[in-house]
Length: 361
Image (cartoon, rainbow, N blue to C red; front, side):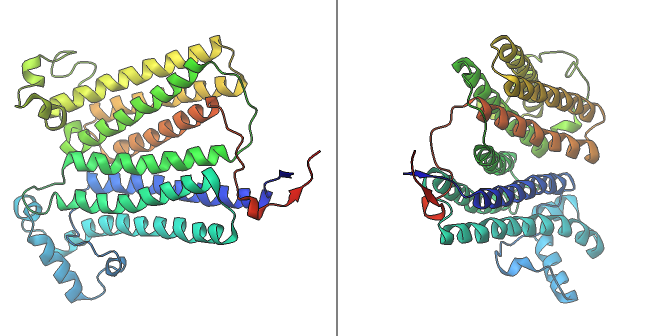
């Protein structure tokens, strides 16, 4: 007996996951705008249900503003802010949180429907449950990040901000991978080294995303705005890079060190992707693999150029958000290339309970 996946189930699951992935990408960009506009601490309470609605009366707006006045960011940075100005930053953070709730519902309700129909099981079902769990964790990590800026700091911890971003993009990448796995492809015989380099590209990309979030969290993109030199030299002296004690704190807290790390990792990523593109052609790994490697290399070059421009222009919000958007594109192409080069096991993508059964020949 053999099983044949129901085409309509696979198509519906792919459409659903594509919508979720697009919403996550949008949320990452809204989160970036929230950070750049210093809006992330404008809502000082976590109300998963009640917080769905914004303040609807003048008294409610006054109460929300009074809550913001009690935190260090207002007292040290925004003292004298008017209610109208407060509303300007409030709407960014409220939109970010609302989008998170929307993503949760857009993921959960169709998922429950597919489970009820028996349309997902096995490896696909397990992967979708893991993605759901990561999404729930992301909500808690978001509040953990916000809480870091409510008492002693005037902004959220850059380490927690980076963790929040990387987790969001981990969820995004898992969905992109799952989407690609639901699409038929010809099985090639790519050398193992190509698979290893494709996964190394993903690892370096995530490191670069994490460092980029540290740069944003420290506002390190607004200092040392020269290229290719940084503070007058290509490699700053160790006394400047590692002056804080213990030394490892510099990796996260020192603006010069963090920006230097971000630059060096960018160079490493460009070289690694260029090597991979050359190696894929040399190995004759197939037309799809070659095209995927070339597209990845092209988008990485665009991203590098945007990064340099953003730095030289002292991180204007439009360039910074475009830089973040292309970073998502880099991750997308990297994940697609790794999946393209990874062997697939003979796994039925959707539940046998939802499939017509035919006779084996």
